Length: 362
Image (tube, rainbow, N blue to C red):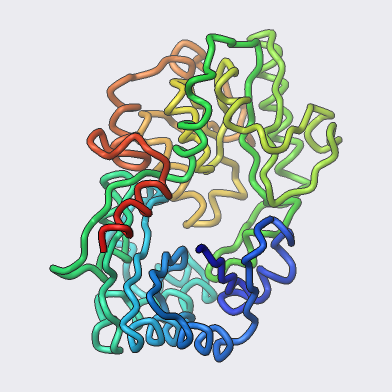
C-alpha cells in the first residue's frame, strides 16, 4: 500500500498558496498536512513502513526527520535531480561580495541551511537513511549525501525525466520536423520560482519577452523553421501568447517536442535532459537583466559550459554561428548524461521499480 503525504504547505506555505497548481496528484491516498504536529502524529502511527522522502533535510523539516528517526522507521532520501552549478571562487567569498552578489534574502536562507547542514544531522538526533537515491555521478556531491553513513546503501537510479524517456523510447522514430523548441520557465510572467526560499528573479516581462522574440525571429529567418514553446507546467499560457509573438505553446509534450525537433533553445531548464537523451543541439541564452542575478547567471553559464557553448545575450547585437550551435559533441553529451541523468551501470528500469525491489529485500 502506498500513501502520499503532501507537506508542501509546511515546507513553503507561500509556494503552496500562490505558486502550486492544485489537484495535480490524482491518487486516492493523498493527505495534505498544514501543521508540523499533524504530520508528526501521523508518523507516530506508522508500523512496518518505509518512507520515501522527496524532501531534502534542512531547518524547515528538522522535526519531521526527528520523528522518523525516533520511530526507527527506515527511509531514503534522494538527489536524483542534481544540476550544474559552479562553486563560488574564493575571491568572491568575502561577506561584502556575497551580500552584493546574492542579496540579503539568499544570505539569510544560506545561513539557516549552513547551520542545519546534513553533515550535522546526527547531532540533532537524525538517523542516517537506509537508502540514498542517486541519479548521475554528481548526485554524490549533493548536500544530502552527507546524511550517508556506513549502513546506507546507495541506489543508482536516474532523473525523473529518464522515466519519461524510458516509457517512450521504443516509440521513437526519426521524425525530425523543421521546428526549434523553446524550453519555457515560469519567470518573468508567472511567479512560481520566487516563492521558493532563497530564489529571486530579476527578469521583467517588458524587457525579456521582446528580446526573446528577437532571438526567435533570427532563428526563423536564418533557418526557415518555426519556433514552438514547450510550456512549463507551472504556467498558464494561451495557445498562441502575444508575448511569445503568437507562437504555439504546448503543455505536457516537452519530451516529444524535443524528440522531434531540429534543436532546442534553453535558459537554465533541466529539461535539456531530453535534448541530451535524444541528441539534439542546444542553444543557450542569457540577458542583461539575468546577469544581475548571480544564482541564475551561474546556472545558465554552468549548464552551457558542459556543452562547450557560450550563452547568447539577447540584449546584444548578436550573430549566431549556426555550424557551431547546431553541432553535437557526442563525448560531451555522454559525459553530461553520466554526471546528471543516469550512470552507465545503473539499471534500465523505471525509478520506482528500482526502489520497490530494494524495499522488498528489507
